[in-house]
Length: 265
Image 1: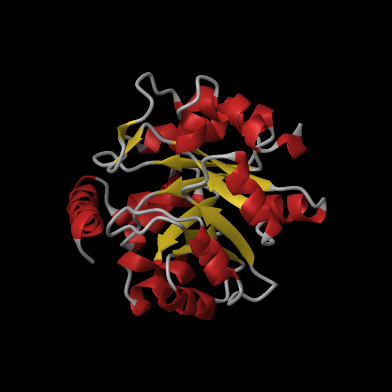
Image 2 (image 1 turned 30 degrees about the vertical axis):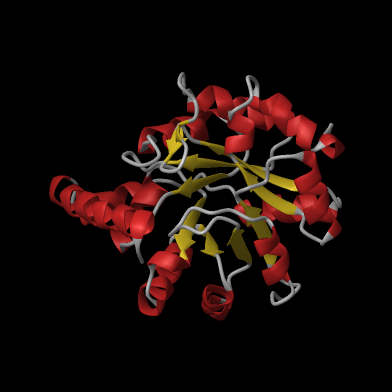
């Protein structure tokens, strides 16, 4: 790991250490156990695919390391409601504070006011964060292969599934894909952005797709900025999309979602 990704992971490790001191794991586990209103992220995507319609995971985030502040007057609840009303299948909420200007409260508040499943988008490197993800109300957790060893990836995946979280395993290249496939989870996210250099190319999804069994649900992430991009991916049998910045730069994120996916109107 180098550059931006290594900086994020180093920071995240310090945050986890601090949180363990102020909020012990035993308490977080209790709070996680109290979260019984879990929605199936996987089922929501499958329902769209059965209807032969694109499945959209629409993202709420204030900013990013590469773009800075994207939404000056950021209100995760308002954005999430726009997405839901525009036909989004699921919502992704950034909870990283330093690099993406998010927070756990954003996710908790979004979960309370929408009816569709919610993904916690963050850099998960410790089992403490898995229980924390459940405790703040998420239905699905993101595990990024690029910042996890095989042993840790397997452990985080197992703990997540044991406590009832769906797991989206994110990969960027074939080596990471092979690692993800060994877990046998139903969800694979292909990040079109290289997290070390933050360069983006949607053809990355197309390149890796042929190596993924048909029983997996593949989500193309990042770099999808136009209807043309959507059409290229649809033509290559990609039906699930995770999109944030393109929606968020519009005055009305929900309207932009409709523009990119008229099939949902």
